[in-house]
Image (cartoon, rainbow, N blue to C red):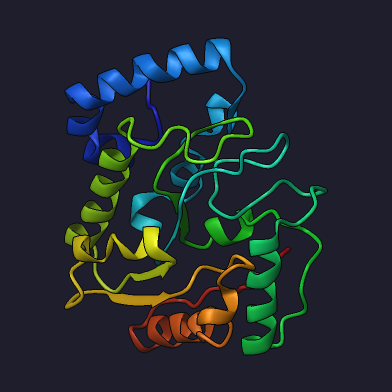
Amino acid sequence: MYKISKKWDELLQDQFSSQYYMQLRIFLKTEYSYRNVYPDMYDIFKSMKLTDFDAVKVVLLGQDPYHNPGQAMGLAFSVPKGEKLPPSLVNIYKEIYNELEIPPSNNGDLTCWAKQGVLLLNTVLTVREHSPASHKGQGWENFTDAIIKLISSKKERVVFLLWGANARSKKGLIDQNKHLVLECAHPSPLSAYNGFFGCGHFKKTNEYLISNGVEPIDWSIK
């Protein structure tokens, strides 16, 4: 039975059978049994289920899932429709409006981006309730680094959006001769005015895709 999809599972087979991943599974089994952990275990790989390997045009890296009830849904920066928008997502919508004049939405579900080829990947895929970075260092970083390296080595002309120190630390995994890497501050209210606002990343992403004969992303929220 596939964990994610046929293509992702084939590419990540060595990761799923590795010692670190076996240890990670044991850790997660205990965490999900005795604690509140997000997202729902069936949504851990949602970013890759919605964005197949062959469909990836853009990689948007987050850190780890939202840690409050009802928010995490397996897509970086995204929350289910009806949930209050997190501050970082509010700032993302502001930047999109400033660049492309797309009005901000009250809907924080970014599934429509994922279905267009935006891989909304957190570098750590699970978190304990009310405890940010609680699953850091348990093995997820090995797994998501492998995903980044696979995309870098096996694909061409992908845009990598690296916002904030955690995401920017992954720059060395990406072949910049084949891909476009765009870096800036994190959209969090603590850092958005230090370079996220005015970054132009959404416009630059589409210009790059179009220039390489790839369908651009519709950044509006459906």
